[in-house]
Length: 439
Ligand code: ASP
View 1 (tube, rainbow, N blue to C red):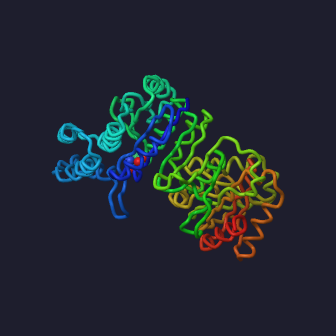
View 2: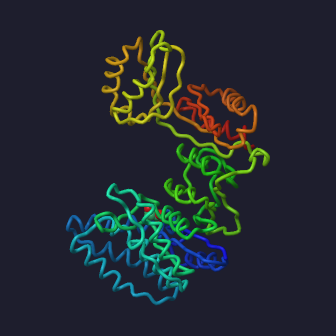
View 3: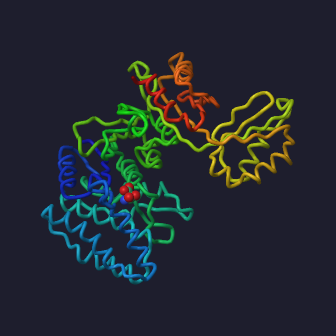
């Protein structure tokens, strides 16, 4: 019998009609089914997510202001779902517990978690599934980080007692015994934790897009959806700003070798994107590049010094200066007599004088040059390990588009080529690269 972990995002469970779609997707599966639900998301563009309503309600309560109308508005969202699903659910007693909590000692994370708690309980009632409250099974350590092993053991035990359950996403219990949430979008993480604990064959992550796109649709018109991507490629693209799920959701399933399938609740017929541990010779499929992603907002600090190549420990000292200022670096392109460090502009700006003074005092350079306004673009694909001429294609596409390349870095994993360019060229460069590899 197959075991499937399925996570449904906020837009998939925003109202009763979405609940019905979700139920028919779940019912079309067979085997042990563990469902993770988010709080109701936006029903249309200008709508408000229930989680945001909960935070606003908490803000009023914590300032001792009247929170009753904002709590009523939240209750109305759930009430509409219950009425339109035609189920019996005691919303009044749930909301009197919440109202009492807000009047006594309001806690921000507890309040935020009620969206997932109620939506999951409602979904469990609608499906006739068991409801599992993660407050009893998902644990965070003193450092605020998920206690992955304890959680896995406790959750596995709970899941082994049922074949069909809905687990609320987004929260667990902190070291102080109080409810604690993940960062925003954290139901993805709960889904991954549940998949691992259930030893699922697949983690289906149901959202409102038919998978991950090979480029940012705000820049490239109608980019292809990615059919298959490895965890490693996903990491590279997410790091450069491509987003499809919460970043931390990859680790639990990756270590357990469980594939992720990103699917669209509104178009269940689409295959979506498969995120897998290994891809068999991906170049054979004709796709050398899996995706293109990038970000603006980087600066380069270039330190020049004659005979730098003979100075042992120069690089370590420079990186130490950056690290001591609490700034992390992205890339370190170097030449014989100069070395550059590419850093996030905002982090650098906040520590600029301290870094420049240390460079002067410790490294005694001939010149120190700061360039701002750099954008980085990563061209990512397992296929390039097997294929010649990928770098040449990147550079000629950018040259043809008259984009000046400021920095080049091929990651040692050989699955990405990163270029640094001037920010104003960013959109043009992404399109040129997309045309070269995808059109
Ligand atoms: N409801 C939470 C949020 O809006 C968590 C989630 O949806 O994953 O961030």
